[in-house]
Image (cartoon, helix red, strand yellow):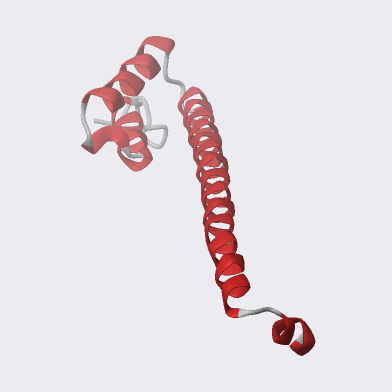
Length: 105
């Protein structure tokens, strides 16, 4: 390595650095783009998984299709309801309690 550097003159070293800097910047940009695309797809995959889990929980709680649709549409309308916690709270509020007995007042 020392011999290689000793054989390179100042002009050649400047030219080599002038080639390496744009090359490394391009490679870094491509890596950043790949990370952004993969991260976006991963986030969409997680969101879809959470929505499917939410729908299954609402079905298991006995909600009808109209109620599920209303809850999921409410999520789109209000930013606060966009969280899954808000959706689960809305689902439990609209579902009759299974712990209460039918004759209890």
